[in-house]
Length: 343
Image (cartoon, rainbow, N blue to C red; front, side, top):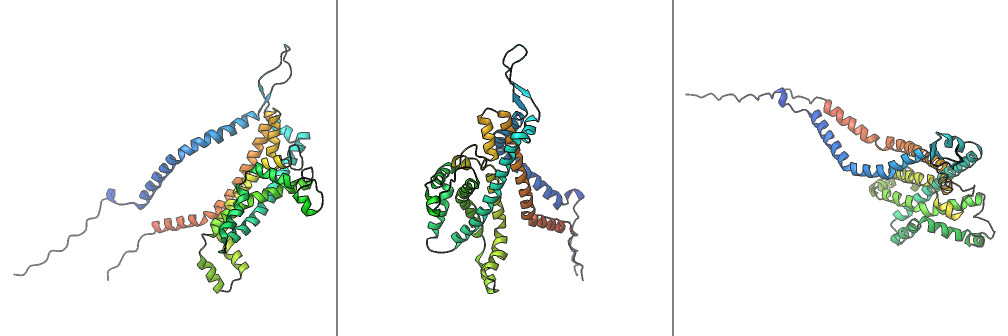
């Protein structure tokens, strides 16, 4: 008597409620990650709101008010504040105050563009020197970072001694130049002192980017016959570009707020080196808090606009590859899997 094998049981199709949806699972993971990130970042946001947000709002409010002056109808001295709207902003953009404001605005922009450009070039050169495997590389790195470690006020006093009438600078030049008086020589003194101090910062960040480049890339380029300049333009600059842009952004924001170096090196009330920060400080020191707050608000908007434009350019370039990868993965997820056709 022969037995017939029973056919294997057919797989049961899961119900619609038991089907696994990759898209919904990915959304749930993303939502959970967002909640976790918000929870972890909330203490930092709260602290920033207290130490950054509140002063900005207070400065904006102060710029719309002014101290009462003169006598009231009863002959008493007026006290308190009165709302003046945008009067301070209108006054600082016209007349004598306007001339001083536009001069400080030009000095701030000039110092920013000049110093950041020179610091970027010198920083890249320093990074290339520190990156080379030569003897005494540690000593070279330490010596280059010494100017960055010196406080700005101490650095300004040091350069003030160098640029005095009988100082080292005039001894080297063989000509007496009044560096700390009005004129272009005062601007040049500030530029030299600022570049000497902050170029190592750019060099340190660029050095970190250089150390991430594999040596195999340069070996392959040498095998292909690329010269040193071609390797620098085609390999080094594109690969350190994200790090370099971050360094330049930090230096831009710092240079736009320049105050202590020209204030100590050259002095206050010098039109050739007066910046927006120095102008706001001078108004506040003379108890003109409304105009001082207006200058501070304009400087804040100027710095925020530069940072926004720079970050937009930086983000569009750095995160473009991530966005492309995300789109590619999403298209793979939507594409149905190929089914096998039995022969």
